[in-house]
Length: 538
Image 1 (tube, rainbow, N blue to C red):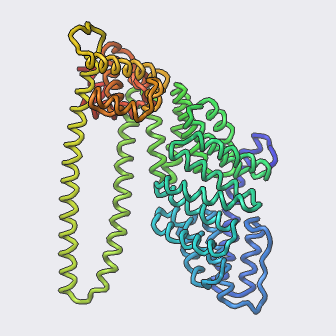
Image 2: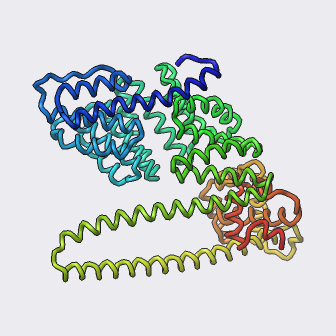
Image 3: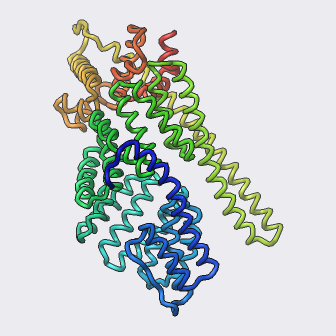
């Protein structure tokens, strides 16, 4: 796309919105005519409309003798593709389901339709159905032996597992997809799979792997000169940079691609990029600059009905306002909690509606009223049992948390007690344990300042393997390294809050090794029973 003057760009974008609506209407009119009269002529008119909008690369022409089933199969499949691209997912589902029975089991193109349905159901938040169709697509492609098509179907399946919060399973699938992609010469496909691999490793917290995958995809997209896809790959690189705490680089990258997303009309990616730009600024302790980006993102996600990402935007606003305007921070925190509750209610309602639909279908099978009644009693008993299990589980979890609270409190007392003093009253064994624990505390306190306080890092500083360090600490303190480090953090937090009453909470959190104030507040309240602010007041 050629670069244009900014003033012309604004006018062009406004005109483009009207043009895109006209284009969609042009295609959908042709589709409606085919549905009304499914002939070769109306099918050809539909594909002419797709070609005119450059949605397909070459025209498709059917002879007048073509069977109605063949025409319906192709038109309905491509109608699903078009409607999916227009984000009309329910309509896309209708046409894909109409097309599917038109394919014979021996037709390899059936895998395309199954793959399409997998993508559609992800957008409709029905992950179970999405995975079902995507797996069927993979099975067909595996039999074909076509590495390019196999890699494509595996990539879709990996994306579905990601949408279902199963990143570890997605990792194995995407590596298979990459292996197949490497066996054929299709750089465009490989770039897509590399991008998906980057997202998966970012989700797994392994950004040192996510970054090179994104960079490989970027180089391919540059060679192919595919600007829209290049922008997506750059966004994936930005996620990895944030995960690696390279905030300044991430900021520069997002400032580069945000206008591109807006120009392309990809407002969902645009809003996500705004969120991440806000995060990069907040992590550089520039909260005032982050606020407008989080605000715009929150507004866009609200209009789209994307609760999940809207929650992240309001959390960013809460953390940004923390040191600037406590009243505004409180408003954002309340809104954040409200959205979380809404998300939970929405998810629960979806689950219940699916359950009720299935239960309703089962009821139709039972024509005998007595059997229906018995079935209902069984359901009621099952629900009562489930409620009882939930209550017992809640009680057990609460007991575990109370024990954990007492354990950490005892450890904090031990950390406070481990101060240099006369060692004449200690045995040699006690003296060795004390010196060891004091060295651990010293290394953890040093590590909190530069964000290097993981169990692996502390073990390395103690010149031990992780396993040896764990055994030694268990012998000396009777607790795991993770619990002991948490106790050091919380003991340090208590002292900062008491000794430095004017220090902002966010700074206390940072000095105690936390990247986010909200995470610090959650941990502090779990251990102390009150928030950091309440602790300071008392």
